[in-house]
Length: 113
Image (cartoon, rainbow, N blue to C red; front, side, top):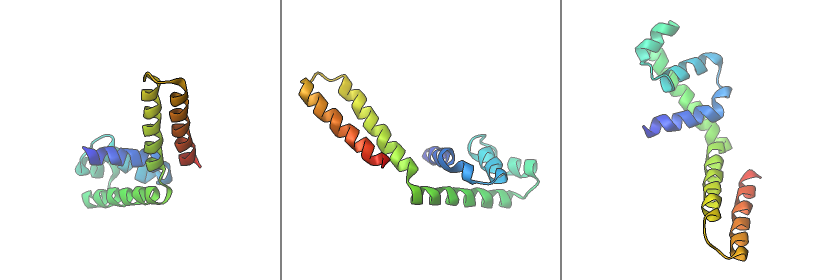
């Protein structure tokens, strides 16, 4: 299951960088959970061709992430936003709260630059 989630995230962030044909095949496999045979029949290519295309797409998408780190940054910012949310429900002195919120916001801003 984790692999499917990872493939979905990669596609969400970098899918537009694939060709239309690649996107159709990749979506059919990852999002529509179609078998290689079903995809091959629908697109008029071999089952091996579908397998190879999905593998190449996954490698390309992972390569984009390795270079750009958008998912890594997104997850870091999401985690920090969750910290802020927890912080808002804590019973703390106002100065301590301000200090912690400032630290978290500084980390978020650092991720964005």
